[in-house]
Length: 144
Image (tube, rainbow, N blue to C red; front, side, top):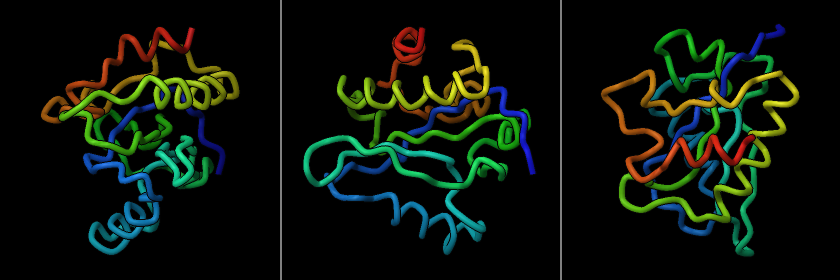
């Protein structure tokens, strides 16, 4: 199935990034606890064991996500998760730079404008996601 992606929705995992690959634990939680067919996000970024940030694949882009049910964003927005709890501390500059590179690539591939790169909280106003200390304005500026 081809999906017409118009947005990219930015999330945080609300978990501490322990410098180990947490992506599989998130996938397991989504599948075993939430009962979903796969991890809800299409991509994620976390600190790898060697101290560099790695972008990890989640759901294939030919499948709707399970990351933002509001405003039909599971079907219109690519879900991109920054692993960490950004209610407690901001993401590192290095993490933002590496994440922005990948998000910019997705924007270019699907013709998505910076204004359509939004935080989950923009649709689910009862959430802080991608975290109170994740500045979406600064992140969007990195995508220009």
